[in-house]
Amino acid sequence: MPKLLFKIPLENINKLLPDSIDKSSVKSLEELATSSCLSETRKRHYKLSLDGSPDLHLSYGERLVDTYERTKAFHGQLPELTCKPVFISEGKEFDLLGQEFLRGNPLMKACFWAGHPNMMLLRFLANSA
Image 1 (tube, rainbow, N blue to C red):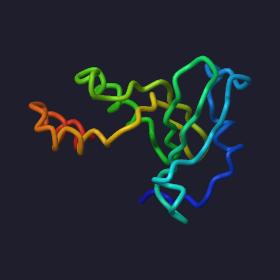
Image 2 (image 1 turned 45 degrees about the horizontal axis):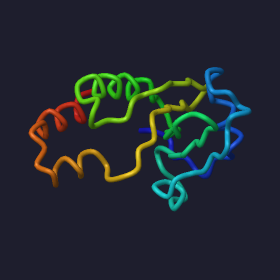
Image 3 (image 1 turned 90 degrees about the horizontal axis):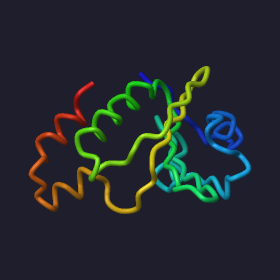
């Protein structure tokens, strides 16, 4: 069972940012409402705004390497509908997954309501481990 995360100091997130992210280009780092409203959760979610680069969605939690690999495969199948994975940074206890930040509805919800023809593929990819 994954450990529950309480509020995480932003410096912990900054320490896990890979060298490919120029720290001087960071405009802001904020926890998203999907996790900030929770006192404890399995993952914490952040938005990283960078000067001269697209914003990134960051996920912080246990054992995210498999999630990163599935996200890459998912994006390879449906690049027009999914966020591009950018990096995985493994920490001692928790990992940091970075992917393109897109505003809007979650993918499954958007595809369901739009009657997307690849809905079965989306379900399969989302549930495969």
